[in-house]
Image (tube, rainbow, N blue to C red; front, side, top):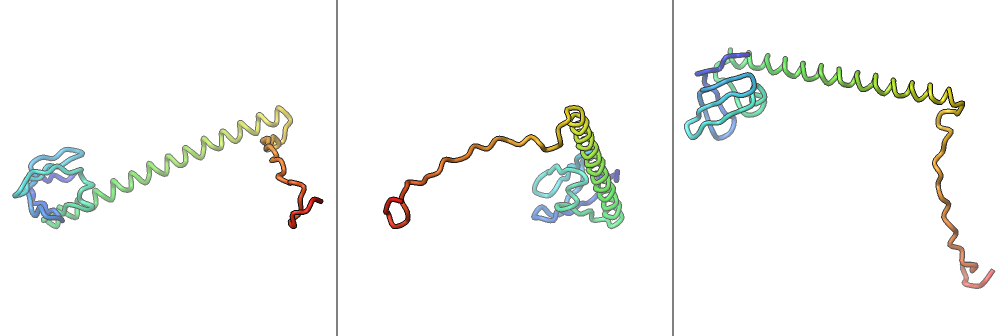
Length: 128
């Protein structure tokens, strides 16, 4: 984590340049001329904040890339886990149908048939 205490930070909106007064793993507190604001760290540097010092800006950029890579890796791991669970369910269903002797997908849902609205008259209005 890049230490930003007492470093100058520029807000991309109307707040201007401020100084970081507090920092922890998840948040930074910046004192601007008009107010004190708390931001999510490092996510706020994607849209709202820019470090004035280029060295700090580069370090924050690298940290953001690492966070994004970790999030992508977690998503990929979750997708693999879901796929394995789906495969296990499918195999259990196949094993169950093999024991019962039914073909997969052979049980069809009952669909009620609508009664005809035939009135006994043709298009001309005369009885048939």
